[in-house]
Length: 487
Image 1 (cartoon, rainbow, N blue to C red):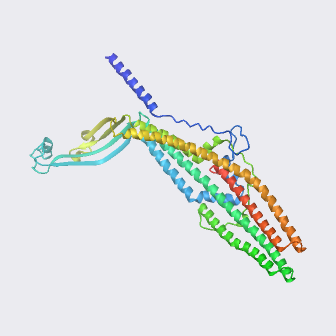
Image 2: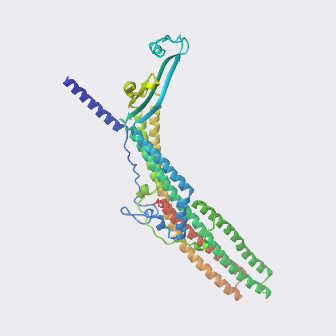
Image 3: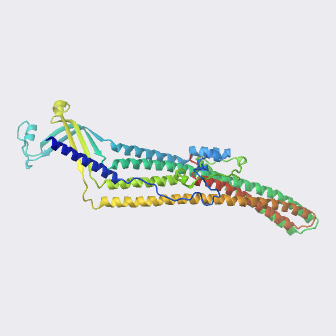
């Protein structure tokens, strides 16, 4: 007898080990794809050795040195609507995570009071059963709608599914990964918000500087116009010279309202990003920054942990691994155990008597799906395809991030070259205006040459301000593309 028991015990141990081993094979462990990324970014002239810290690890307050811009971003991080929506998505993800963790606990249901009364008639095959006679005190029940069954019950039920195949564990892991994706989404919203505020701020800077250039040009035009009028009075030039000079001045004046209108539009856009009603922004505090900055961009592999969209894509890939495991586990039997304890009585007065009315039920269930119209196999195949799509999307996000960093690096490098040329052009144009004035006063140059020189000076100064704005936004784009702004 003891030998038989030992054999049964050994057999059970073997079965258990087989179940555990099979369960481990059901879920494929996650392995990050190999990207074979280059050692540095295309467009970066510096070779990177080791894990060099990049500007992505710089706090945005340290990256932006402009106090006004910092104060605007501070307000936006508190009041921006999109960021508040992202925070709510995090709360939703946390709730789903808590629910997935609760799958490991038994389900508990309570029936405070349950009453049952069955009515039948004479043609029912149990007519006059002992149960109905007991209800009617031993007398023959009525022929129609007599009470066949009468009972009152209160109970507590428990049900618990055993996680032999790791299905519940994968569901919990899926909830965790989904929650982590909401955190990355919030980071991405914050990064984009900061970049968009900085870009809009640079538009305000550009418009303000352009207004200053046009106002300076108007003063020059007024001086030129006065000189041409004097020459006209002296009979040295015709009325055409006066009209052309006036036209040049009016052209500059016409553009000023357009710039002022666009300035207010950009103010409104910035106020919406900050999450407040339209109000003016003190233009006197605006100034260009980050024109001559030099940054360390770090290694390409750092994008995997710095870029929120890349990190979210990897979480999505890891989640797809878990969903494959869940779909595979659904093909294997599920085992549930349950219990019910409570009170049951024929008479409601005796229901609360635990000695004579108590009952206890224990049950177990093994459910093995066999033929489900190919649903289980199809779900598994779909999960495998979704995993492949998630891996491709992860690779595409990484490639996109690499390209964006490269674009920003090349833009900064070439814009700095353009900035040097633009400075030289402005200096040459200003000297040309001075020379044209001197020659015009001495009668060695015509008013057309003065107008041409002033027009060239105006264009060169506007171009210089535009290049400044482009360098500023290129630095912001580099910061964003490296994954900065959320720390």
